Length: 224
Image (cartoon, rainbow, N blue to C red; front, side):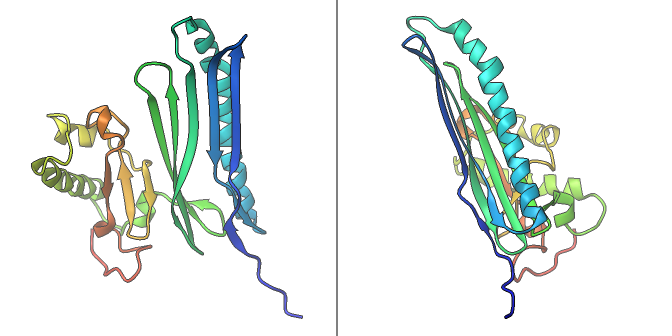
């Protein structure tokens, strides 16, 4: 009998919730949801170990320093603090698993938000970097920044967004090729809150699909 090839599929995500109290008063509520894959491949196990370890790092922070801060700040009029980890899958197929994770901490003031984007080559479970998605060539960083600035202008003209006045400089200053994930259309690069725009804009995102003919169905090659 012919042996069926091993399957590769999303598994039930990891999940965690804990409420920390001081007597009857709630100090901190922690909720977490992190990705997992299902499949009999070493790369799948590698990806799962990575996200299990990522959750544990956040958990140590939240149940350690953040909880101690919440306990020190607790008072009759102090609202409970909260911390949350969640993820969204941007692309999943036989070759690519890409997602982004958002961690949020609310300590009574402005929430602290952190995003991480990941791209994995399947089934090997090897991370892909932005530079590996783009055609070879010089001045790639400059072309990316030009492409980002070209997207900002129309958004500002229509009033779609509010960016800081010196956003052209900030786009370059805060650029990082590590802040990226991959959709069916191509790479998406994002900036942390309050780097190029006020907090109300969240994570400003920019499509790099036109610069990336790879991993984009039926996309014509475009030199960079």
